Image (cartoon, rainbow over all chains, first blue to last red; front, side, top):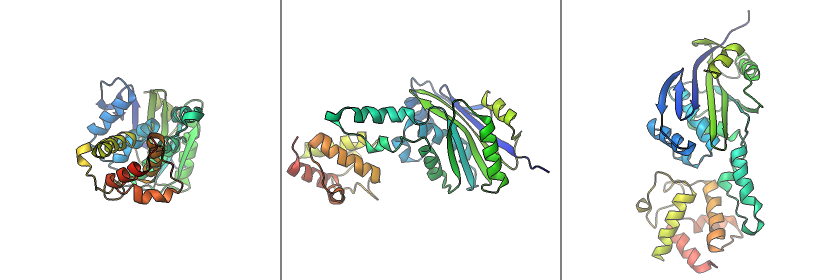
Length: 200
Length: 85
């Protein structure tokens, strides 16, 4: 008999608002992402000074994952995230810094974020995870691959839970949808259900 | 010299994104790394870039940073002696 897995909780971060399981946890009247995400950090009383050194993609992934994982004692949580913009927003900043050969001072702090999977490291540091992790770059949200990859990790006992989903940031526009897959939960872990929750 | 120290504190807070730290909270002899401001290895690289960009000082050996970046005092002293800007 094929074992089924479930979605415990899910979270959306979009348009200056943070939702968990469809319920709004935080909303800000912010003019830009930087103001919004900083006010979310303050609202949730997070104490993690490295947050302010992160690029926008990592800040988005950090806050979206924090509202799902902060009270979870499980540490064997694999991370399987995806997006379409990769780290392009930060890549552009780095490119601008190296374009002028007469004023060539690229920032190491910017350069270290020129890979999208760096945000997985930030989540792992925050929650002390030493687990499997992968970051996929898709043209669009791809529930099919996320479903099969997460299911495989759980079925093969590579992890007890999987934090999966989409975290995208480019040029001020952002959208995060993360969910936790586990042995128990509210929603059946299926491609159609992932797509349904993503579109809420 | 005291103006330079104030300038360094402002630059460090701004360029290293030390959001929760005010200028008044950084004493001239506070350790910048470890138990002090808690700066890390990427911050050290940023400070090396800052010396070059703002003061025209190129560190041939990054290990020199260990002593130069001990505190605001040590940074200011080194900059005063070696600056070309």
